[in-house]
Length: 512
Image (cartoon, rainbow, N blue to C red; front, side, top):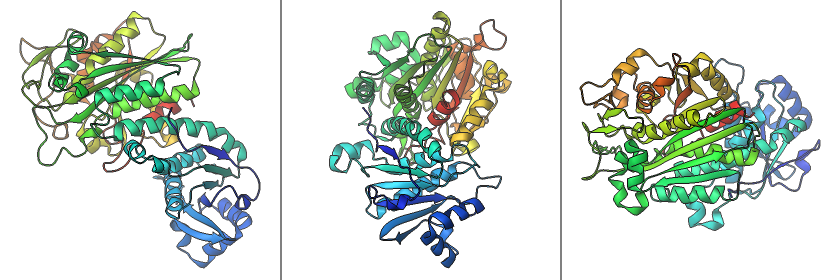
């Protein structure tokens, strides 16, 4: 069970009269004439501050109105080309942070209805919740400080909208808590075995079934590429790799989603050890697996009736030592593809590719209804350079043919979880073509992705080739829709909190 601060919708014309909350956080667009009129009518004391200080409406301020604390958190402009719904997230987060700094324990968001962005209220609440999250290690080491607030309220000039987003906001926040817990926690707290325990605990007694594939011999047989990454660390029990399979099956599904997430609990670079201070933050290489668990936790709250979801979390620790997998080594994948290792720091694709192959086999052998397959990973530095703090989506032919990448991108825009779309080209497949008789595929060159042309597109081509998905392209009688989501830039800063990308966009795309 994942606990979050409960959210209550407050109705009435005069929210400042409520005695249930100790600080009132007004989120508004002070450049909007409609909001200016609303503020003048509903909050005349706040309006007096605005008239006295021209800078008041452009920064977060705390004022006292009739003996009560009021935090004013402006969204800033919303009508320029570069403005998007994240301005409400930022305002909600900044407002709650200021409220907490004042010593408040029961904040309430006061929201003025906005017609500019349809999900503005929801995104405001997600920003507020982001400020209220307490890290897993802190909750466990200091239980008395586990919660930053005891209650969260929402009042809106559109009470119907507030009621409509109440459960949605809490479901998404609970899911994001799982994401932050797994991705943000240190490499010992979330070693593979500890991730297994965490996942079993949160899904115990829910509608999600959990199964585990573990053991060196079993992994070598089932997932040989994964096992190659695992074989150095598997000499230490707590770091022994495992693949966690999650299954949400409501019956009579009209669509099937298959999600494969990379979960490298600590990325040393393998035999290409990361030197020069580049190890800091490498516990954040498990974002794909965190996203899969997060998505499934949202399912336990929403319980959609027409979509089946299968997820694979590839949990492994990339280590150095005498048993580390090596450049130039040839490994035969689950699909029977002979892979020559080029760079042991490109372990993420190796950890995922056999799990992806297994997902492909499930789609075909079990005749799953209308399957869509994803790999999700904090994979490449190139994605950070190419698209910055956004998710790079790289679709295969069948996925692209139905413009599903554009649909997902639009869903992300609506909820503030944005994507940039990339395209697979023939050069990406040629880049991974085997260069000798012993190998079918070259895993990578000997440069980091950030120094490689098309460094975030080519991994998708590698996974398509090595998993056997290439046989299910647009030229196949059994095409499979597949997209790779690189969240290296979008998963969150370090130091800082994980964002939850791309879970919000996926939920928006399929269920909201």
